[in-house]
Length: 181
Image 1 (tube, rainbow, N blue to C red):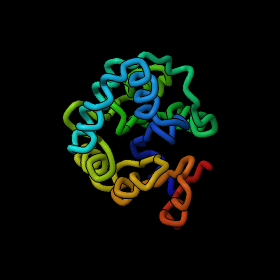
Image 2 (image 1 turned 90 degrees about the horizontal axis):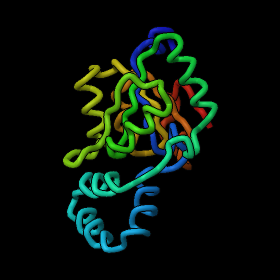
Image 3 (image 1 turned 45 degrees about the vertical axis):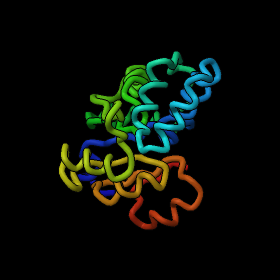
Image 4 (image 1 turned 180 degrees about the vertical axis):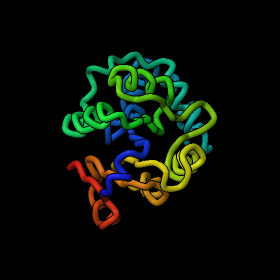
């Protein structure tokens, strides 16, 4: 990683990267176990391509404490150092904005949150497009953990792999600047 790469804004994925779980899964388990009548609506929205809608429906009902989540501590320590150096950090997640903002507020390092909302699921190519629209191709670093992040890394100026899914490092290959196992 060159010195210039370390000063560009860094977009950080939340689920599986910053936190070691997935808030959509947590939302589904906690909310649907208490409100099973919502299950058919979630399935209909999922299978009709309206994932962002069910994420919002569940996020509005979810009550959770961000301090109770399992964070990737080595990565969080590194992010704290980057923030202290003055690097701009953005939480960029496919999770709904309602829960993402709670996590960002708890962590206290992010200057902004880019997240899914009722109409827009910020994942994969859509996340890449949003980051390129904001920072330009190669004008941002990106920290992620899954195959859904490959499209984002293709457009980023710094590739940070955190807690990688099985086989992901082989797919990323030599393009990874930093890896947090």
